[in-house]
Length: 217
Image 1 (cartoon, rainbow, N blue to C red):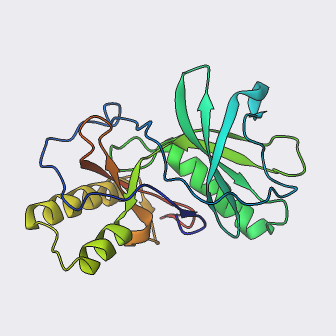
Image 2 (cartoon, rainbow, N blue to C red; image 1 turned 180 degrees about the horizontal axis):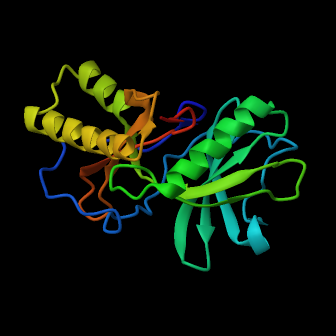
């Protein structure tokens, strides 16, 4: 995501060649994130263990990303019994960025494709610390930029078949957007996540993120 630097687990450098599932078949990861140094809480933090959003639906587990526009929390939905990524807006965000935030949520909820991140819900909490929020699928893996950088640092090349499969999935996602008359406009390695299969621990599906500046044409 452009607005959030998501810190995720170190990824393996090889990609599996197993067949990919459909939008409703992709496995959701529940793995642990790396341990990081604790920081002092801020006044606008959502406390760990707090229940937030509609009817106090989501239980905050930890903050997993932060940027100029807001924060991303790993949260648990006890109703559907699944982990989600809860993206929350900072109170000082200008209206132009608020529109971008809403656009990202709307397109993410509208689209149904295995290579586009799914948005589940959005709203306002009635809390001055968190003007608006949306929940989306929690993806375990690494962004493509980090995967490539790690391979380069180790003097290794990504397998050709893996590269071709990665591009196949990215292009399929973009074709889907174009079929819906939407242009992403911010496609780059940092906005592409290679997810990790929770069973095999191998890198698996490729998922496109951040539709915040997408445009209907």
